[in-house]
Length: 175
Image (cartoon, rainbow, N blue to C red):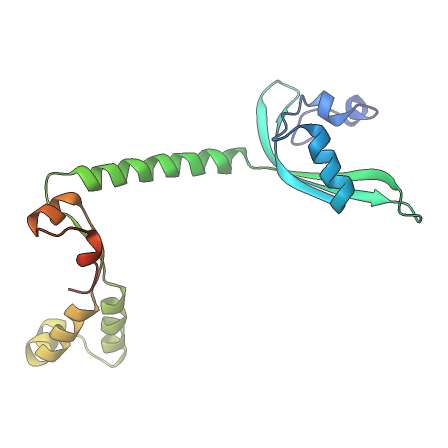
């Protein structure tokens, strides 16, 4: 009732896949064969709600058997993943746009990982360091060490051209 909108008395006695106009990821016969062979099936289905809107669900089917091992019923549980799938698709699209901009920008762009430097700074702070400028001036070895902690994660094509590198892997290391 909550997910699909049909009242209990409207759904009882109906074939759920007909009621909800189920769109299967494979022919129902193939899914049913797997269910009988393994005792379970999992996948995504698209159902129609009572108001006609479509909802994507993560569906899990479990074959229920009698004492002799004969199939008597299928227990099906569905979780609405419509919004999650939409968000995943938006994220993939956004990542694709970012990667395209990153790669094709006419200026050199470096993606770097400073997480080890942050951890080292957190350690200094835990040891009582407060004035980092003063600490760096009096401990230049820390600065040199911190530079080696920075990891180059990615560079774009303009960087390869600028540095006359043939492949990104030539540049992906520490500073």
